[in-house]
Amino acid sequence: MGIEIIAVTEATMRRGLRHQRQYSLVTNGSLTVASMHQRGVRFLASADRRLAIVDEVEILASADLGPPS
Image 1: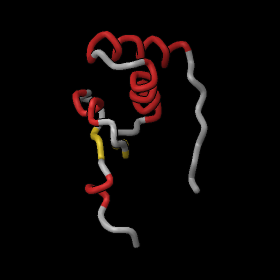
Image 2 (image 1 turned 45 degrees about the vertical axis):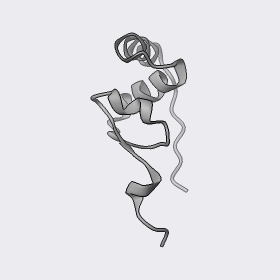
Image 3 (image 1 turned 180 degrees about the vertical axis):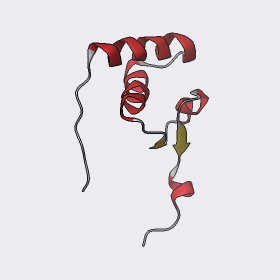
């Protein structure tokens, strides 16, 4: 399936805390964004539109992904 599990480091947590403060995100959202930054990932498939305010990521909703193949 192409799923990769990555460690949440102290640096990731610090970046997540900055995202929490800057964008008023909840902990899970801020850690998701920080982990994405850590791995160089820009696109996130999510129904959580609150993450759209984060400059570093682009949110893709199910309608953006097109019909199933």
